[in-house]
Amino acid sequence: MPSFEHHGAHIYYEEFGRGFPILTFAPAGLRSVIDVWSQASAPINPTTEWAAYYRVIAMDQRNAGGRSRAPITARDGWDSYTADHIALLDHLRIDKCHLYGQCIGGSFIINMLKHHPERVAAAVLAQPIGRVGPMGPGWNANFKGWTETLGDRPEATEQVLNAFYQNLYASGFVYCADREFVKTVKAPCLVLAGNDEAHPGPISDELHQLLPNCEFIREWKTGAALEAARPAVKAFLAKHTPAR
Image (cartoon, rainbow, N blue to C red; front, side, top):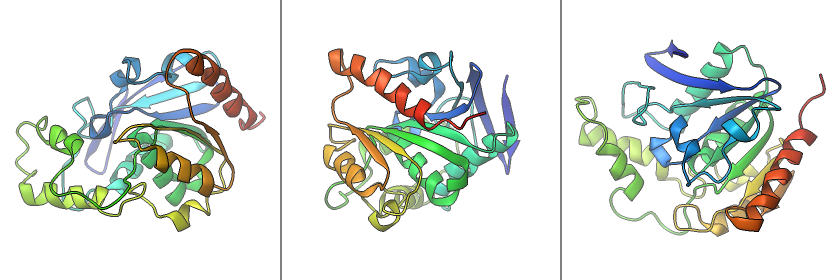
């Protein structure tokens, strides 16, 4: 089974197709695993959509209920995930790739652009997460649901989980970066808009306005809008794929 170890983490991944690489981040918040790509919550499944043209890489995120696992500590946050993503690219000897992420994948992408912009050719953020307004009391539903899947993890005390939650969500906007950073992103980006509480439309609109080199598709999830979005995303990726 394709997996590797780094800094105490065991990371599982799968590859589909050949060509310029696309690293993908599935939706479902902290339960982001490869199998989610085949569910109805993912209108565009990159593992089947682009395998005829690209080397599509999918992964189970750490501690998401799949086959990737790592210790849970109070220091964990967005950078912990980005370290996994970079370690996977290094493991596969990939210097540069496209990124496609839905839901939490949008924040994974922005954090990658924040710390390792040289590794990204272009990025597609599908219904990115974010917060409009102040942080509510307690854990959000996704985080609470994730904690209920952890099973016997003695290191995951309430104190550790509270610290992890704050590291992920306290800063607001897209959680991993502020608006001033987003204004500096140089990579071409395509935003497929969100339209619900977890993926607020205003966050997608603001990303579209702030990202310097950004295309935008407001309707894309179902019916004729989805059929139009599929070739549009494919064309965006092709436009920004480096010549070989």
